[in-house]
Image (tube, rainbow, N blue to C red; front, side, top):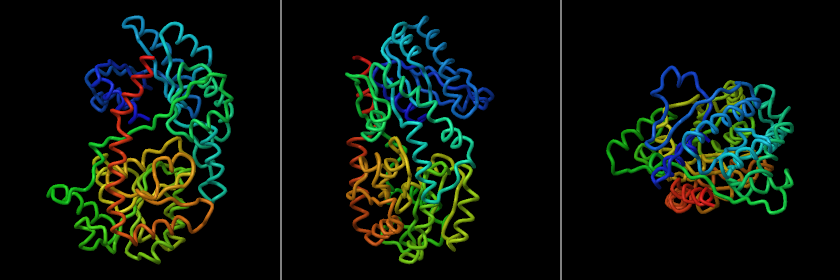
Length: 407
């Protein structure tokens, strides 16, 4: 969400608008302001919040409202853009903003109840216990309570904008919108300058590619040259190490993948409480030598990893939209993801593979199918990049949102 706000703000400024971002105060940023991203025409205001799971959304909402009214008094605001569910306002607070400031456009990034149901579904498939993560536990126990703020957003916003058709249907079915509810669908874009395909004719790029590939497994010459018919393919998975992201499901698929492609190596990049759990599982499955779990890395290195991988796997049990598949496609890397929720809205068999969560061997079959057809992967890579450029950019997002603000 921070990434979408940053890039949307920049794109709006390039269109001639002025943007103020009201965000949660961060102690690291207070100590070292240089880490705060700067964009000309974007004013960032930091507010107090209570650092407790779920409760932060309400305290942040109250602080943000006070700051918004102060900003508006000095420099009138034309439209207010709220990102749910990270900020919680009541219907009364929405009405106050519409009365005192102007129209409220609320982005629906996914629902608390959807996340809760995703965790329950993931648990049924043997993912990590929810109680191990305080945030997940809070969603599980209090999601129903905090859903009332999402209902307020649905009923009191001037316009709602869902990030997928699946998210729109989710909110519509759960919160019984009032007659005349206005909800548009705008899928978020990605940074197409950061996430770019591998340029095999660029010396520095290929040196960076070789460096990344040498970190994982035992790459053959074709993998180091960026050729798709390698016998040592690299599979990448990115996301928070929490139950609903499906990393244990991904690990269960690895014996089937290695049976067909013994030189394959899986890299999982993400922070979270499940690292030791995943490492123990990999050991039990006998695939530890073919799996690396990175707790994080510099963003430029991660972007390089996206373009240097042969496949990106995204086995998530719940998403509002899910940006990882788009970052992969922008990088010219085919995606294997879930045939469920919003993910098939972005990914189909022309740019990757889809698997069925309810069929145990489906993920391994889908990965093996792509790895066994290198020429098809090359075609998917080109089509995936083209799809992102045509449909998923921040300039397109800004055009749509500027239209909503103007209305």
